[in-house]
Amino acid sequence: MASGHDHDKATSFLSVPFGLLLWLFLDLRSGVCGGLAFAVGGHWLSPDLDTQSKALKRWGWLRRIWWPYRKFIRHRSLISHGPLIGTAIRLIYLITTATLIVLSLQPLGITKPLIIFQDCIKIIQIYKQPTIAVLLGLEASAWLHLIQDGDPLPTEWDRKRHH
Image (tube, rainbow, N blue to C red; front, side, top):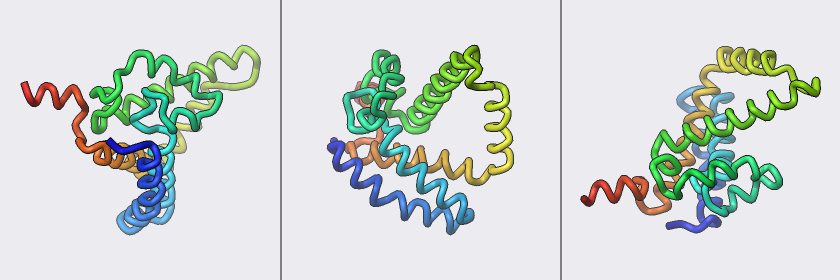
């Protein structure tokens, strides 16, 4: 299993080539978005958010939002380290948490949740390729993490495979 430092080095090193690859196959905007998403995925949305990791510490005081995730998700489980599902769960968790925060601020007159939601949907519809590039970047950084850990299959898959 790689150290947090090794994960960070590989993420930083490969985010630019990943972005260039997306630029080659899609377009410049998608390449930039995908490369940045690769870096964000590796540094802030790591499969190791369920531990006291460097990724968790980067959230600063906002790391508290990950407490329920950490409490209920076992490290190297299908939910935290599963290909596709791990990234999807972390994104759904983050979007749900952000939505709850936005909704809790509404009575204070600070946010207008429906407008924010509608704006996000419009942005995704207008920028389909960059949105796909972002999702690819997030997932690719998770795969890099899993490969560096020495086995792209989560621990519970490995146990089932050997029994």
